[in-house]
Image (tube, rainbow, N blue to C red; front, side, top):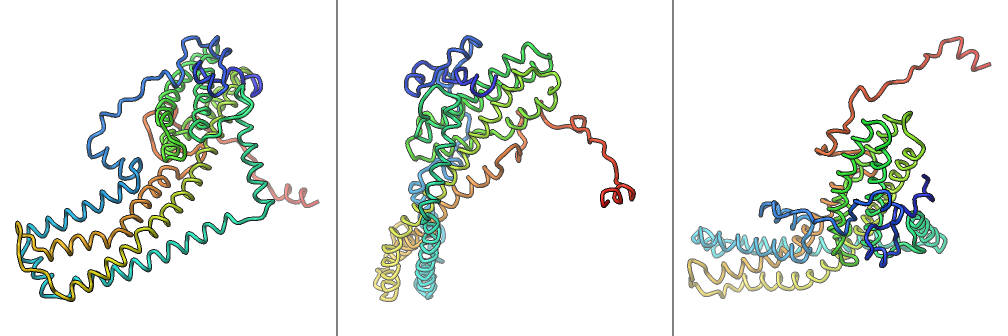
Length: 401
């Protein structure tokens, strides 16, 4: 069962998806009539997440960066106003009797100009890498076409999907099919291999279900495409598949070995796609960060300059409303606006760093221990060091001669 022989059996199990993506699954359905496709799997219940976990996930990953920026700014403003209500005397004395506010806004003005200059300079350096000769551009395009051609060997379609979300969903369908095929073929082999393969396919289906659910409503170019790749832990699947061949290699039939090899190759395709889409995400996010900073920097600089002049004139009336003075409200709002460039940078960098931390490794290395690895984890009994001979002086003399 090589790659070409399993192309028909690695298609889509859904008739609707077959019509849209050009995938077929007649052979695999004959092999596994009770097999469910990703489109018919019941979405996982995410209502168990606590409000704190939902907020944490929204700030770091799923939320739009503009919305996260606004949320952080509202939090800063609410904190400043709350401080003015709790300690009104201290805040009033600080703003009226000292030059601290003017010094603070002067520092923010200088910092905003410096921050925007640095980010725009770095953006120019990043964009300069895209300016290459025609041969380099041709090689990049040829590599992309070859990569898509590898996927087309597994499906009955002339061309693989062009949209990233559909492309990754196609790979997930193939992974789901191939894992199920491994479990089905293993039923005729050793009992240990058959039992482990069945447990393995259940974990793979669950992982593919979660990633497929994220991709099902992903818009073109949205962060959900990358988020699905982050949620799919292919590293431990590579580890388990390679462990099958190592542990049961002498007892596996040619079909079983070929099925495992095809599964490993498909996981490698998914890993390559995830890393490539991650690099595209970084480029897009850095460009968006630069543009957002340019949009907010000029109004922020103008407002901060006006605040410094207004504070110097000291024209605010000495009245209070629920312990809040016009000066305290004005300074709180102005300070929040002056922080906008830094908060924009924070919102974008938080998600970029989260993506980096969640995708530190590319390959069969598992950096986080999960429950799904317990049955397939490594033990000292699984590895035996090969015997080797220590070269002697006579061996070295013979090698020199």
